[in-house]
View 1 (cartoon, rainbow, N blue to C red):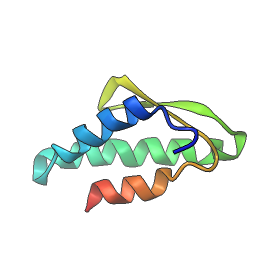
View 2 (cartoon, rainbow, N blue to C red):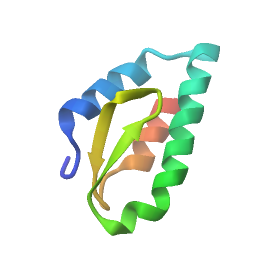
View 3 (cartoon, rainbow, N blue to C red):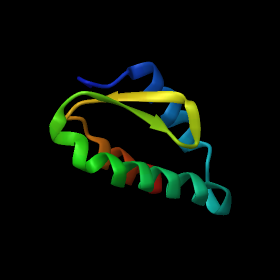
View 4 (cartoon, rainbow, N blue to C red):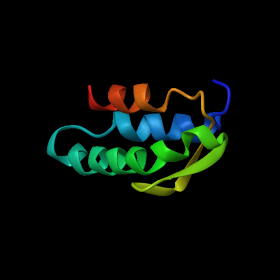
Length: 76
């Protein structure tokens, strides 16, 4: 997964997997807001994305990273 900081991404995946129902809704809303803020920056290349629900977790992405696909996966 070129461009991702894999350890941070794994931590984020674990956190997302532990949210469900009403308890998970705020986390998903924050993820949606982060994606909306990040979308205009994607063509600029590699940058760090701090996760609002866990500020200690940072994901490093690049313009080719499958960010939107993963956020859709979290909603499932």
